[in-house]
Amino acid sequence: MTPDALTPTTDSATAATSSLLPPPRTISTRVGDLAVRDTGPAGHHGRTLVLWPSILADYRIYRHPMEAWRGRHRLIAIDGPGHGESGPSTGTFSMRDCGLALGEVLDALTLAEPVVAVGTSWGGLVAGEFALAHPTRTLGVVMLNTPVSTAVEGPSLSDRFVVWGARWIHATPMYRSGVAKAFFLPATVRRGDRVLEEFHQHLREADGRALSQAVRSVLIEREPLAPRMHGIAAPTLFVAGRHDAMYPVEPLRRAAQALPHGRFEVVDTAHISVVDDPVNVTALIDDFLERASGVKVEERS
Image 1 (tube, helix red, strand yellow):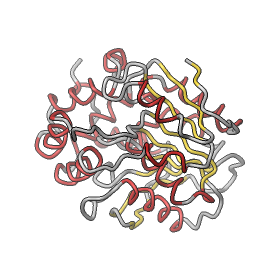
Image 2: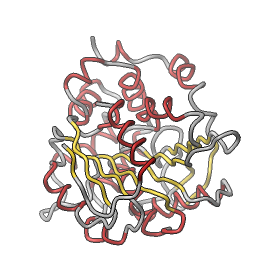
Image 3: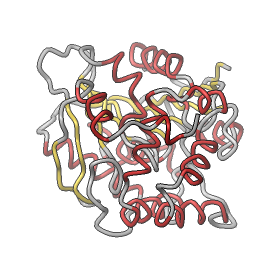
Image 4: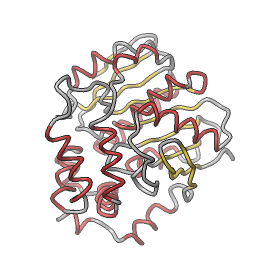
């Protein structure tokens, strides 16, 4: 089955997600106008979880955990600039800018309580930067498949192609299938469930100029987080994919050793673990939320 055959129309995709989270609110930040979905404080007795996705995807990559957590925790899901229903970025931005923008979102929501910042890839960098900038507002950090280092030789040709493609050919089956092959396990691609449908829909309907500008900031311009991870004081869960060809386990494990209160987990996934193995990843986060008390980096693989 082709990606286009799997991809629903805009109306059907909207209907499929309309009951998951409330409609978005637009919040102006230093990196642009961001689409923010908030289940609100009413009736929740758990944590406040703030979710930021990877590049080339919107908040719906968290579909499974959001379904599991709705009613148990307050969920605040953010589409990054140039992604989903967010507006374009105000220009080239740093990962620190994104972390500060997350704080601006919480300010706009008048949220005083500490939060758990949850991010995948780009989102993991945002979560780490938020924790560095706002330690008293950070209850915990979840970094999924997060590229905390940068190559000494600079961005690769494949990274540059991803940026170029996001501008000019993002909607084509070739580009979408290529990104899916890099992001997900072959079994996930073959499975072609709703999250995969939404992933393809997001790329097909994106604004290429805005998407490419954001992807360039993350892939080409980003600063490494690894040298500063020792400053993340909050309990941190770091999850790596055993089959992630872009960001192998060993360098990530070495970087995670710097976390003062870190817990390192390896799962049998590619780059987007929350889509490849949503049940296990959700369970890991649930366990982390219950305990969140590690004093050293530990690995259970």
